[in-house]
Length: 222
Image (cartoon, rainbow, N blue to C red; front, top):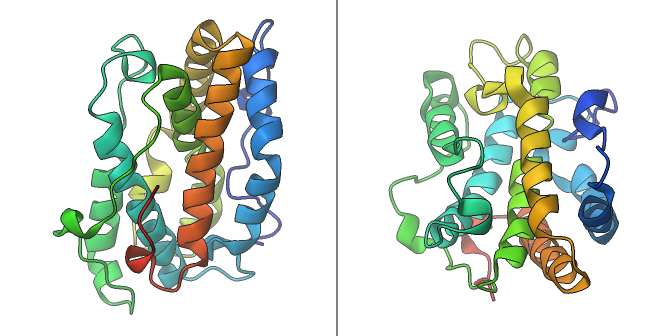
């Protein structure tokens, strides 16, 4: 698996837990551990020798996963959508730019980025705690970008790998700020349970898409 690099391996500083953060973070990690392990074996970048078409297939799955989630999350302005958090990363724009790059157009993978209406609608719980769990998975999905970028940039050149490269210099600081904010709001048994349900649902959808031969054709989200 890419010299045994896991898809969201991160520097030790990113994984370090500050005092008071272990409650919600520990519960979220425990609730998603098995799903996390499964993703490491089924995503396109888990193959032994990664080619550009594997990276593009990886992005296509992430796009089908993120588009409904981002549209749903955009309806809210509290919890993880509050303006006090680090600036939002436009991950869909980065994915679309990578899929449209000249190097990508020479590959067999083709993704229609002009028809978001074809994608299913996310119908998750409305609570902020549930959304913290969903966003925990979204934020975590890019944590390994710096590691993967360093390993793949020469192999997949001249493609710029913009999605993997985005924000890699501030990776640790962004993650720690997110976890501090999550822990401040998600600390009771009820909110931790809701966050775990949100995280599990987000992971389950990504797993479903990764296991689907044509991800855009997968069943609707519940």
